[in-house]
Length: 202
Image 1 (spheres, rainbow, N blue to C red):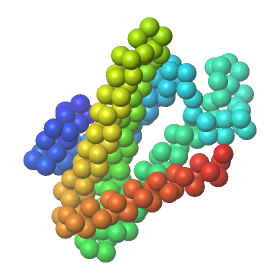
Image 2: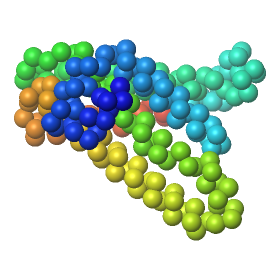
Image 3: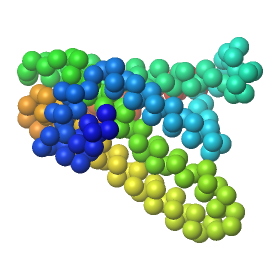
Image 4: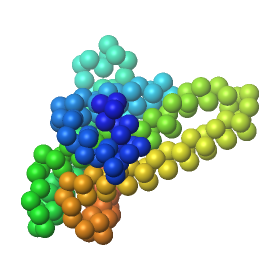
């Protein structure tokens, strides 16, 4: 997985996009997503944050032993997987009109993007916990570090969209403009879906 991600991030057009699609399975991508998701949520808890989906409504019997409400984290994980599946369905419904494309390949692309989307959150959270202490002694320096990390995270989000376009083009060979339009539609639909989902459970 390390080599696949290295090639995808640094050589997406020449070899990376094809290499990760040929050498990684849905199982390996899903496992990697689980690891990244767990690390991100652990960093979030260390920084004093928490996932708030239905946090005050449902509780599990195991909560009293682990010290926090587990249900919101389960719901958060499931919602991210369902959104990945929704993205794959939306892409398949679009590309099947133009060319033959495997749904499995599109689902793999969706999982790859879901893994990469964990990286901006990781960048934002990796120094958030120690910066809480830095704010007490050097607030100006802490703010500069936080703004720099946030800028890098924003750039990485833009680059992830680019990688999404490259992966789709490499697998479908559909006109790049058509893929760009599809990506915009997908992003808008996913954003709206997330908003509706959050509003419905808040």
